[in-house]
Length: 262
Image 1: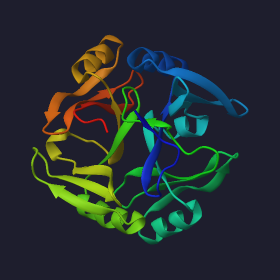
Image 2: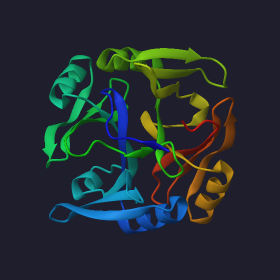
Image 3: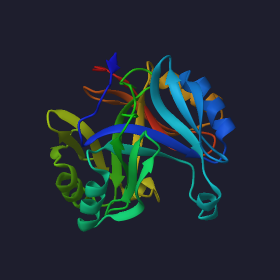
């Protein structure tokens, strides 16, 4: 069991779902992952739903607001990276070519948040922790375990993220598509692959992965619950077996049964 009490800067720490139907999304993920929920009012009319496994916080759900719906922003999972200084990191990101979508702001006493779009189009949150460090359990069934950038410009994204966070990039040609693994200090930070034309019109995005005990079983259950299987279960040699799913509102995420969870 990988319990987290803090995250080194430059490490993915949290993921949350912005959905068009919070009640239905809760029902879907409760059945799929066995999550329990804590409702936390944030502002009048907005509730932040924290997803739990026992005493551990895993991720969260919230409803898309009228402004987002008016801009036709679809339901999506959003990944967040822990930083020591949200203001300074956001400023550097803009200097490196990113777009600041949400300026740094306090989220109560939980922490300070900024949201950027990288120069290749991927959107990610910058989280300076206060009382909330992020997920307190990772790499266990139902918990987040990996984050992967899918982009049309892998070289440009590599240049951006290695300068922004000091990540090192490791390249592999073992699979069907060349893969980049970002390393933060001594630990893997996330992955990246180049979107291929034959995959269709997929916008650049960070894809969140959740660990599961059985990838095939989870894919079958997601389909039974009214979700979609976008990428059928397949093996990643030496890593595990994964697939890409969509929930009933269309938000994409991946699940993986890891060979070596730690």
